[in-house]
Image 1: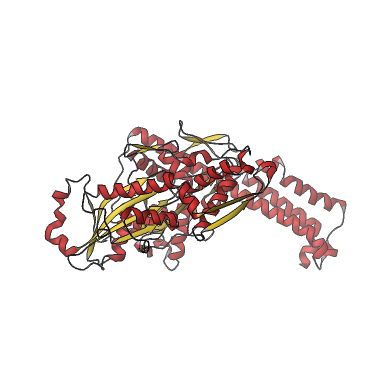
Image 2: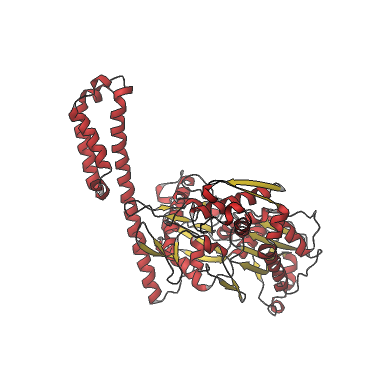
Length: 561
């Protein structure tokens, strides 16, 4: 009897994009989506009742979408769009005013116009995770190409590990596991993102600390809409063996410090051999602070100051509002490289005139002082305070500052970090942790998936979610098959029409009115209600009839091809 070969899958569900990494059995391979990209847009598009859902990389780009595309799936699950309480403070989500889809927060659902139906946030995330699962299986199959079919991994062999902010409440963690269950992912668990970061750092730098030495690390991760700050301590194992880090005394601090042991996963070929451990001294996360807040600050600045926009009548979640917000995002990226920049946004001003957006780094810094920079500094100060006095606010105590996330590439964000920890302007940040570190850590960190305790009410909800998603997936497959047959018919008719003018055997094609009527009639049928409502079996039957009629009309031409 052979032991099952489980494939661990680390997942970091971001506001805009999701990163996925396989575990040690597949050398921590980054999972590509069906288009070959290394990230998958966290979005779902409903093209209509007679069209398959467009999930992940196939979904319409959120910045250019209408109310039938739902993004920010993870944030809907957290239910933070109108404000989330973190450490006793209410964090209002400024992104909420720019949503184009109809999020009914009180009911926990999103209304989809093209379907005339509401879907819960858990159901929407389940749809997306179904696409992630297919991408994972495709990657595993590609990597396992040399194995026997009996060794190939199936969805039952996958263990999904989600990296989430430490502030996630238990209800949200349960909802995430339920969404995975509805996507037919039976083995899943949730791990704090800080532990994932610590695991990756220990793996990369565990051998770099000399005996009886410590290294204090500040980690700042700023994404599009979330920011996390952590204080880590890399400690030599020899010291830990001597005094076990005085764990009993540490418990008197505000929170018990976590120790990330050297990696030793069952059924794993990945052994770090590290001489050090990473201790998590503190962590702070904010669900409503990110690089996207800079876009919003610029948006409101230009709406208030540009004459061509001051009287323009459009809402933040309108198409024009989205175009202006996208222009602000592009300007932000330009200012990350240049001291000044300008961007032209087409047809959004008065009388649909083009609008030029201009700004300097200094102006943006002034605009973002209260809404972004001060909040970030407050988070870092809070993390230092929560570290229990082990790390004081001083240059000699923070030896390394690790930056990750797109927001940390912005110069004024880096200046704010230097300022709050008292570093000079020439202080060099480390970028050893890239944007995939959370997913990688989730796939690496030692854990065991335990059976979730599910009461009767939750089990009933999970079962309904699973049944609904299975039915929708089967419907999608049928609709995709219909589209394939429709495309075959359309290509067939187009080829016959084109052959009259380009084929060497065009003289063999009939020129009768009956043949022309056959071509025109088939084209008309393709866009008729009958075709729209036809089943796959009816489509196959129609395609067979068309092929038969083509043989009757064009037998000589087909034989000569």
